[in-house]
Length: 479
Image 1 (cartoon, rainbow, N blue to C red):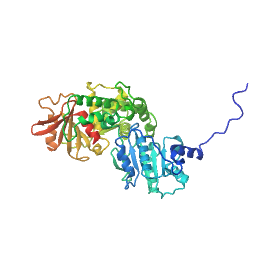
Image 2: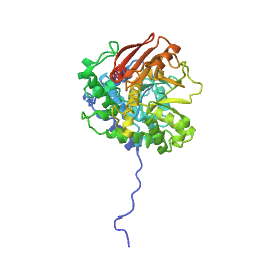
Image 3: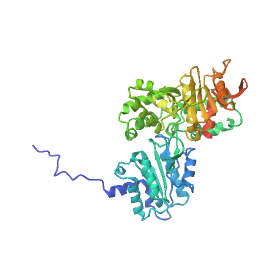
Image 4: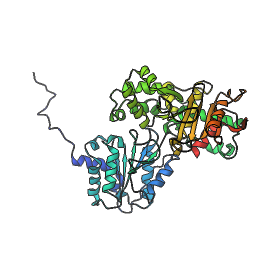
């Protein structure tokens, strides 16, 4: 008996055509169809505080190398790219001289950047010597993406080439990369000051927040309101999607709880980064997240995950290049780095990732103190402080966080965390930190980060400051 549902012969398989590619390019760049005099309008989503420096750099006269915007998924890189694109249009460049390419579109996968740029040039009859602007999103999907954008910039010296990626960044700190052939700008999760601005809380709190050079003291209702916002930030506020609602009892945002971790740990980006066992990567990330703010050793991690040490190091490098974790080097009691870095300190780049894995933690829970420390470190990841962070530990003592005067240099600022406020009430107080300061740099600044206590303090002949952690995090993020 025949098959009545099959009518005639099967059609020939359609292959991807040049017309398909052009149609997708035009879909990504709707302004190409505008006529002269058409007014270009863009939607105006909330702007991240770090968008302004990115836009300024895109418009800078001296930008002559590719600008790479790097950060984890969900922090708003695509929005910042589009806001930069709109700024380029406002600066006077014709929209027909701008191309936007989202390389996650499968049809782009069989073409390198040069070939895609050629379609753009041919569309309008431009040459490689013309003044153009090319925005490349999801650079992770291009093989040797950084090398491709550098080659494209060399081929089109008058063009601006701006790209965004979420993993395999060639650096972790804003500045030159690839032998000065490209420029990296890090877009980490939201700073606390950005969170307050997005929630429109800063307007109410601003008048009662002392400036960084004024006082470490904040009291009463103002401090309680700030700490309440800080607790929301720690739990849900690291990513723009987590602060769309104002309700205090909102569930963890779907992007953070489901999409973010799935995208980075289990699918495309992990595979593109050479991770072939996403379950092992996920298990390692969960262990690191559970221990955020603590010391870790390769030996212990290998035992806990069942992953070979060489593979483990590769996974750690991937997680750090994806801006999900940050490792800090260890100093000895004299402030010198160890020749063999057997131990290191690990932090999530946002405490919100902890919520995504394990659920919310209350401010009175002992685990919350490590999330506070994680949040403080997270405020440092966008600027030059990111390359100057360390910690110290030795038998019988340690300093939670250290800012060096330069990478590999002398301690400039020491921090001890005291969210429970039991250290400062002890007779010797933060004696370990004070003794470390005497041995390494008597002029070093010292700060104890608390929950509610603030003001100057003195231990022996050494001055130090007590500052509520929420207030200090606001200063760091706003600075």
